[in-house]
Image (cartoon, rainbow, N blue to C red; front, side, top):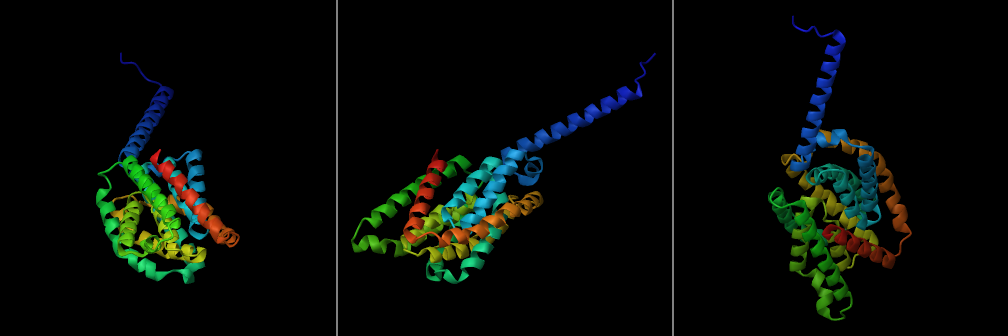
Length: 289
């Protein structure tokens, strides 16, 4: 006779098979998301610790757009620690764009458009180069490259500040300095959302006061981030799931954006410049090491 399996045994077998299949599906999804940077399934199984990192990153995103410019790279690092590298860039982009709207709303009258028009053609070139570079270079290589360039720009900034001659004063206003900065900003913002320190050093070099500094940066990043959206969608860095996650992260982002102008009003120009330079150096060291 064939053995007759009880209903209880059958139910236990079906339950075990269901658990096993779902575990395999989750593991396959997790491996694929880390290998390919695909955000479509990675965001649906986040731990409490990952959500905490993302919420803190969202708060710093809002604060960096309206008050403390150098905090932007810290938000990038928090997202990159919570999500796969490629997925983190697509997940952060819509949140950055929402925070940019706050920056433009607060400081729209303080932008220096003459400097923006010098940068935009070169930024477009950098974004296109970054689009083709994605998938061909690793995240670690990009991070070390950006970190090294930023440290070189900090050194150039200090050299210029300590040189009384006309060459040092004229350097940030040359066409090739704007071309190099714009191309680098476009490339780094496309591959890693890490153009913040590049723009910080450029805006400091051209001598903008803090309100014009924040206002010019707000318009720059809102327009550039909007330009990047079709590229990120085509690369499947922005997905339905990532947008749902971003909607939840608006909750910590908005208080950060509202707090920024309060902090900025209490900072004098010297303290503001010192703070953003220190944050840029720390961000550079974090990218390299």
